[in-house]
Amino acid sequence: MKIVIDENIPLAEDFFSAHGEIVRLPGRQMSAADVADADALLVRSVTPVNEALLAGSPVKFVGTCTIGMDHLDQRWLDHQSIAYTNAPGCNANSVVEYVYAALAHLNIDWRDKTVGIIGCGNVGGALHRALTAQGVSCRCYDPLLSIEQNPDLCELEDVLQCDIVSLHTPLTTVGPHPSRHLLAKEQLLQLAPGGVLLNCGRGAVIDNKALLQVMQNRNDLQVVLDVWEWEPNIDLQLLERVVLGSPHIAGYSFDGKLKGTAMIYEAFCQQFELAPSTRLADVVPAVADNQVPAPVGVDDWQALREVIATVYDIAADDQRLRQVASEAGAQGEALSQGFDRLRKNYPVRREFGNYQVTGLDKNTPLAETLAALGFTVK
Ligand SMILES: NC(=O)c1ccc[n+]([C@@H]2O[C@H](COP(=O)([O-])OP(=O)(O)OC[C@H]3O[C@@H](n4cnc5c(N)ncnc54)[C@H](O)[C@@H]3O)[C@@H](O)[C@H]2O)c1
Ligand SMILES: O=C(O)[C@H](O)[C@H](O)COP(=O)(O)O
Image 1 (cartoon, rainbow, N blue to C red):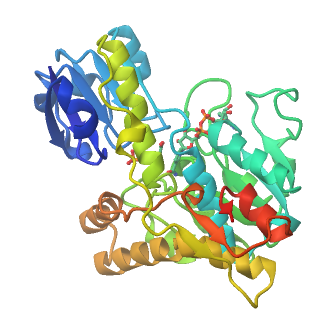
Image 2: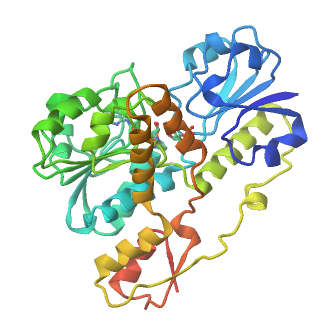
């Protein structure tokens, strides 16, 4: 069996090499010729999987090691009876940690704010549960959920009024609730004075042109963008205006990426009726230096910020993107390549659950907040 695999899917050899010949390729450049004799195709979000790529190929299984599926032409794949799957929830926790890291870096204590969550599935739902567990008041917008599933459901207009609004919808263009440009100029103008807006879903869920226009007239807004319309050729004027910008890496914790590989491996084995030869637990490395001493001599909020920054330096993500943008100088090939290079060479980032915060009494409010964020407190 021949398995074509995106070069940025970590540890694919550990999982798949027992079952066939592996060919690694850059995702953005995969062509019909590359898959002309492949049985399985494993991609990330940057490969459009459609008739142009697969027509006439023997590919029987497509796995995307991502949550998002907007790059798969599902209607065509269904019509061709080609099996496909994503990795639901694999990096949901990574995205939630990105949100905490962004807010902590911006010195915005979410615990005394109202948080609006748009899209409450794996990612938004996890954020909602974690915030609710901390006593944070949340309003959610998700027209595909019922009030029984989520008691904090509200109208979009009410969610936009929150102090913090975090977007976690897939990108859809059809169906009763298409999310493309869900936040257009009209909605962006409704954001609360001094509001914070984060997008960790897909870039085009916010109309990026309208966002730039609104931000040019509203200095009070603080916008955090991990995802951008027209990636990887992002709008540099928008990057200049956002308080934090990153190259679509919210879900890039090492743990989340490995979970994605492992989930697709399971689906691949089921599809081809193979006995799995590798388990996630066999390949996940332990964190060598996992003890984080609790900061002393600072208040709880400052201590929380310092612990988060110790394990995830989100400011470095922002600085690297701005550096690439300044080197690229203008929109175009250099910028796109720089954006992709940051993603390809993303440093290993381990999730909070791998770390133990030491020197704290478990019953203190700080310890409880750290535990709610996933840290172990010793
Ligand atoms: N930035 C990143 O690195 C990163 C990482 C993971 C996922 N994502 C993106 O986040 C998206 C959400 O991930 P998930 O795991 O929570 O997906 P999910 O499918 O579990 O949940 C998505 C939720 O959005 C809701 N929704 C759909 N259309 C909506 C609309 N028009 N308005 C409001 N809500 C709507 C759905 O009902 C669902 O509850 C993914 O599709 C992916 O595009 C980005
Ligand atoms: O949908 C997802 O899971 C995320 O957006 C994921 O992090 C995308 O990463 P990529 O496939 O572009 O490397």
